Amino acid sequence: MKIFLDTANRELIKNLLPTGVIDGITTNPSHLSKEGSDTRGVLRDICAMVPGPVSIEIVEKHPDAVLKQAREIAAFAKNAVVKIPFAVEYMPVIKTLTSEGVKLNITLVFTPLQALMVAKLGVTYISPFLGRWDDIGVDSAELLEQITDLKSTYDFESEILAASIRNIIQWQKAVEAAADVATVPPALLDQVFKHPLTERGIELFDADWQKLAKKSLFE
Ligand code: G3P
Image (cartoon, rainbow, N blue to C red; front, side, top):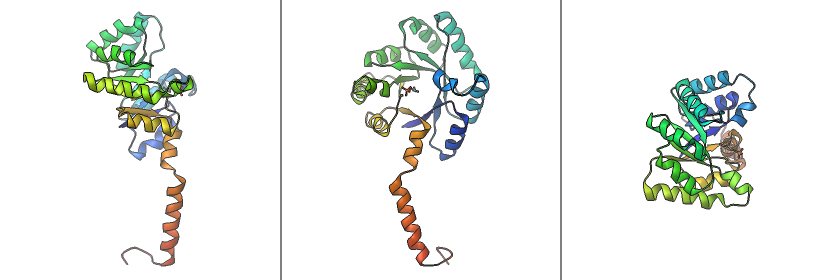
């Protein structure tokens, strides 16, 4: 599974990149709104910092303006991926962009059939929103399974990018459903790295080693 960080915060990205497990970044207008008004500078820094794909969401509304902005985003950095919300009026735009070879991440996907529609257009990533499903009492794990089953049944190439992951259980369910990618908030990744039993175990090993009062393992 590829792991993307779901944030536009440069400090958090910088701190977690050395772990070597970050394959990309997903941003959205909500993330960007927390990072000040220099959105160009924020996105430029993130694209330069991260070797993998960086999703940047369109903020235009009219399909003509969306097409223009999508091309600008694609030209902004070689690792930029254009994020477009699922909507019928954007389908022709999506088709044009995929035929031009632009990498797209279709966001706000909530049903398997929505996923099928954009898979048919050859998008790079399809982003179902797990947390927002669970918010309204819908079992996100079951719907995600249906989407990943649909991918293997029809053998389409688009990658399933599990998004809106807010807790470890949702992330684990995305693994069980064999989602290609999980985009997770930095705090969730921290939770994986800092387990109290692992930390306690290290302390116990160290305490036992100190009893030997040796300087090195091989002296
Ligand atoms: O990747 C999309 C994600 O940021 C949405 O998360 O928690 O706002 O539903 P959330």
